Image (tube, rainbow, N blue to C red; front, side):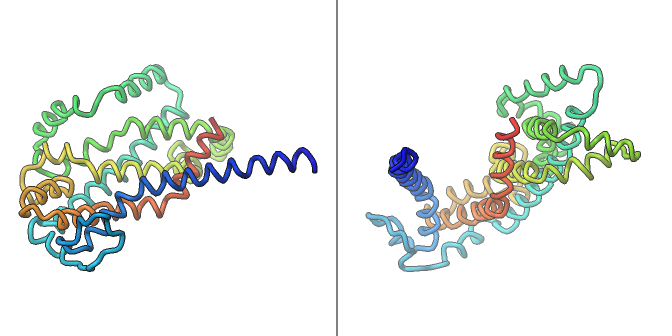
Length: 281
């Protein structure tokens, strides 16, 4: 028996133990979500039995039909989708343009401006609420959806993320394109952006999730129920539906599913982006 064979036999039990530990931790993390979905399909009198039921018995969909009776769920979902899509697409576009400027262009004060931009990451979002509110009021956008997606177009972390990713793309590609007469926009959208697919997918997931789940901004900027988004609607539902928790669970399930589906669709790109960033340094 060789030394390599002995080492493999020693590693296998440790690796198996690590895999079992990771599976156990994963089950603990996913258990609340599974329980939430199960309870949303369970009748109220059987929802909180101990030990908990992991299969909805008796099965019912009445909890979901009770949500639109309490709040304008469809309208709020449309508002949330509109804000999340516009903010995600707009933020990606603005961030890509800004990141290209900081990564590829040379101008006076570039590094200083980028350092000042990064310093914004040190400021809590709650401290910028009042200035943003004053700005939206001066623009006449209070109690309207643009008050939510317009400030979200500037994402400092997204600019930093794309700038670091663009720095890993060889500059020889830019030089070859310039020899053929290509301009900056052509290089950006024909070379840089196609090579940054995993990074775009990862940032799209993070941005969509953050805007979709945002509660503070809609609470401050919106006042009419017709313009409210789902996070505010869930709080309204919890306080106005006679204390029926299973209906609230059904509404939360309907809110969580789109973000979960988005992550499942782009999970390979998300993992690939993180892996490439780690390998490229």
